[in-house]
Length: 331
Ligand code: TRP
Image (cartoon, rainbow, N blue to C red; front, side, top):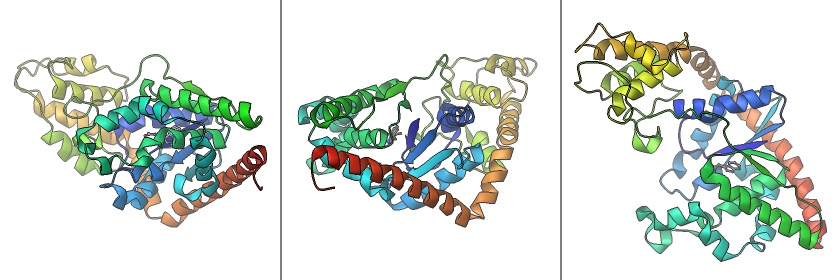
């Protein structure tokens, strides 16, 4: 299995419930797991490029704190695996510009108003689905957990895979998207929209307990006298109820949490916020303790990454040799 993250910022509760927990579970089921830190993908985003190194180390810290075990899961950096990146050259010859233009992510970026001028829509962004195909195919990953929006990338990956194999011989393996089963836990941001750094509505795994209390205190509620769960009409309040439920030690639902305040008509806000912050802080206690220890031991964190990169390089070098042999170029 291969998954990846772009080191664009710190991980928040949305990442923890949306992907991190799932990765830890799959790892612990004995599935061979790899995580690519897609640092070369971030350079298309010029504002963020400056913090990539620090963001990368913080990603590794959060992985380890969440229970990713470097003896079971391979963590590596895109930028440190030359042979992986070199696959880009033959792969680009197997994809047409038209196909890339039809890719929904590429299309969305093309029409994104921030990228309206020609210069900001660079060729790396244009070829980003091919880059992702390199990540998947270099290590024969046959399971890639993705959301619906990423399905076209997986389809393109398999087109590249089958075209290469047909033209040059069997080198790459077919891959499969693993869509989330059952109910997807979507963690809303403080304003009820999707939790994300850019919307400034996130609670980070790296926030301290005090920071969490402050963030929750400042979060928007409303002046409806009774407390009840209604994500459409009461986004802020319902986000708070969702956090309290997700982090509840008693497996409560948002509705259960709301009921706790049925005697506090017109004055539930303070108590709710206190409960939410308490629940989040106790839920993240182990994670944050580990994270603080790791922050003091960056040598170890860097070593995890170095060893991961070394192993990924071995895999990539072997695959590149096979690729070059199949292509018939000097190898
Ligand atoms: N594009 C993914 C994201 O934005 C990160 C990623 C890079 C990835 N390479 C990958 C995910 C390969 C799965 C497989 O989150």
